[in-house]
Length: 77
Image (cartoon, rainbow, N blue to C red; front, side, top):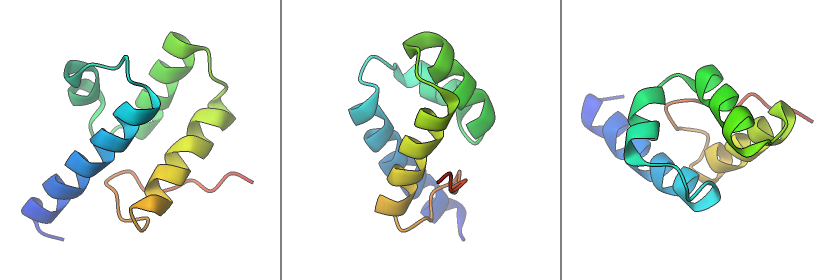
């Protein structure tokens, strides 16, 4: 994957994440780019979601993007 493709996918992923957690700022997303585990912890702490729920929502976002996002899915059932 080229850097341009990865950047385009991250931009789309960011948009979908902001649809779910609209209170997140661009600075929040910049701080956690490529660090899914840290991002999940941040969402848990800030919004009170369970880890499973955050992971599940991120997996849904990944699937919507063809599982080709920068983070990839963790597939929690």
